Length: 54
Image 1 (spheres, rainbow, N blue to C red):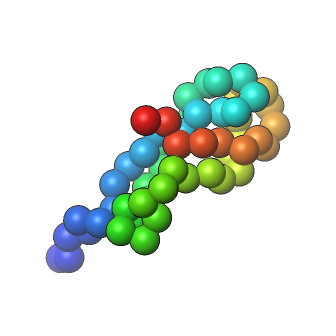
Image 2: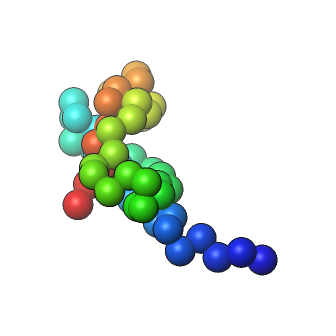
Image 3: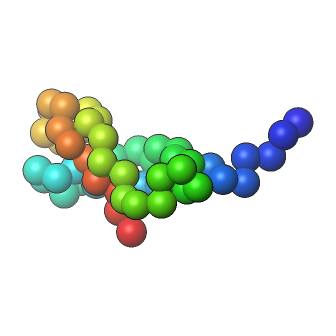
């Protein structure tokens, strides 16, 4: 079984309400900068842009 040493889990934060969303995995070798993706926020009850929390 192969090890994924380049992938790690990052926590995402909603840009509208600031709520923490469930963790997402990213490849830190291909994407060293902070991740920005659209995710569903259960607190806002809509799809919003989520940024990686450091």
